[in-house]
Length: 168
Image (cartoon, rainbow, N blue to C red):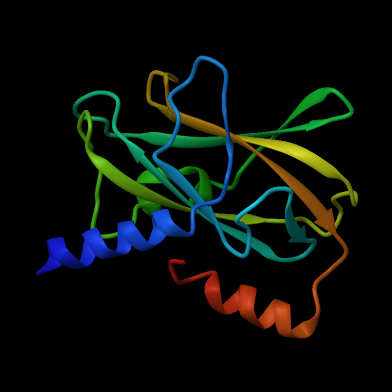
C-alpha cells in the first residue's frame, strides 16, 4: 500500500514539475517542483520561504551524507549563499520515508525550504542548486531563474508559512 501511495505522489509531482536547466557536466535531477512555479523565472518574495522538491537518484552506494549548496549568478558573478544546517543537510529533509544512507539509483526526494532574506535586492538571478556527497562529488544539480520581489501580501505569507512544514 505504501508503495502505491509513494508512486502516486511521485507521478503527481512529475505532472507539476518546474522547468529547470541542467548544470554543465553534472547529473540532472529526475524533476524539480517549485511551489507556485511551473515556468521560470519563478517569483519569490522577500521574507518568505521558497519551497522546492528535488527528485533525484543516488549516484553511488551507501551515501551517508548529502549537502545542498546554492549560488546565485548576478551581473555575471557567481555568488555563493551559505544555507543553514537544517536546510543544507539533505538527509534530514528527505520525503516519503527515505533515509540515508541511500544507494546507487535509489529514487529519493529532498524538500528544500529556502528563506528569501528581506535584505535581498529585487533582481532576477540564476540560482544553482547542487547536492553533493561527503566527497564533494555532485549527485545532482540544476539552475533556475528566480525573480526576487518585495514582500508578499498577508494571504501569501499565510500560505507560505503554512506550507513550510508540509510537502508540496
